[in-house]
Image 1: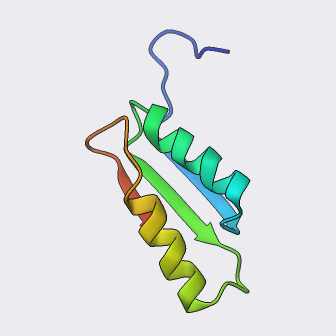
Image 2: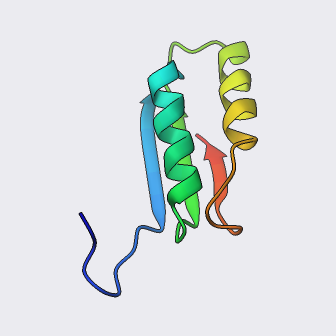
Length: 75
């Protein structure tokens, strides 16, 4: 699938992120291949502990990015 010419995804928001192995793989893929991304917002599920949130942020922060200007935000 491709976007029509001139359109690109600049902001991606993932709500209720749990940090499962499959979700980590998908999030890392999006960060790596989102060459036009400006912002990725991750909202962990409300029941996530502070330690779980810290681990999620640490792991995703270290993932390679397709865009040098992409900001990773935790909501």
